[in-house]
Length: 270
Ligand code: GLN
Figure 1 (spheres, rainbow, N blue to C red):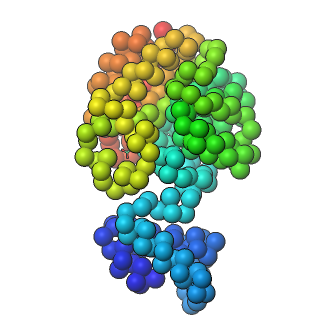
Figure 2: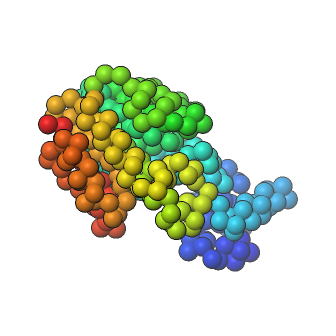
Figure 3: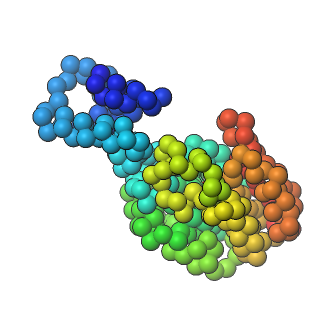
């Protein structure tokens, strides 16, 4: 464990990472490690652990090494085919739940669902809603479907295709955490982002491209009084509000994440 910690010393979460990886190798939890400090690893498990630590030291995200992540307290399977769900995105889920009445039978669309995080979180809280989730990546749709099955959340319809293209009919709510980082942003070449699917992070040279497309689509499929809610970059609040306004939305506002950054913009269909 000490060696693992030294190897990972460059990462600010070295100790935490080492514990998660060790718990994964032991098919147990971090609290199990604390409860059993004298535990000896078998040779096979020690080798497995060393390999994982080596890959982590090369920068690979812990979630891809363990194949799992947690979002909205739901355990999710993740692979390099999908973005690792972020805590900021829980702000989007909270915002949606504040507006969806508990017994509502709304039609809801989650565009670019990836691991299914947003759709699954909402489905877990609103059993009567009809939720449709899309992704252009067939590998992502497979993972999202698998996550829904594992969690016993059968009331989600998954569709492979670009944004709203595979969907039909009208919706009460459209939400998305789209790719929003400019293709030339140096952050894409740092940390976990280096290992995540590029299409989930950046729409191309203009970070607002996907946000514009989704706003246009939402403007045409939302019922009157329906909502569009989008996650975006911390410097995109103003442009996002303008985009929603020019797509015909009203009551537009932006909410901040726990770091105090503008993160979620929503608007109502007039
Ligand atoms: N919030 C993520 C990050 O900056 C990016 C996710 C996205 O592009 N939708 O790390």
